[in-house]
Length: 225
Image (cartoon, rainbow, N blue to C red; front, side, top):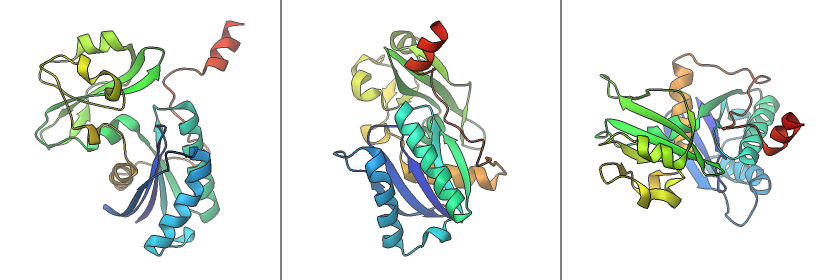
């Protein structure tokens, strides 16, 4: 299965092309350009490098959230438009699960955290099952950063983009993963989507929407009024 994967939950996103579970090309988007400016050209250049046409793509995978409001909207809108144009299927994957896919096999318990702004994070915990896979212990939860740090289970490994700011605040018995694993990547979006698609998971093109950590500021103001 030929897959185009988009990861736009952070300020600097990435894209990847994969043939089933083999990542053929992966590139980080330019830091000096907005995602809306760089995403489409990067997709075109990646297709050219691999030698595929847009019509070769069978599945468009994208991180559906949680993550940046703007990044999620751009990523999902691009994924849906591309899939519609070429007749591909589309699949949104969870940002926490994408982070967990990069966790070393020796870790049995993993805590993931994504910045939700306003001193809060969206957290999730994974544990390794009898098959050796990291599976969620709970749903995602919006927490104050301090409360989340206090709730970390001794011995857990920790990952997520928020660690770039708070790694030095973790308890000594909770070790962060290496910094290069703190951010989700398009390559892992492709791998996760392929596994979930093979297991029978599907998304409807018209129903796929971002998974936000909270209502936007505009929505909160409207509700308050």
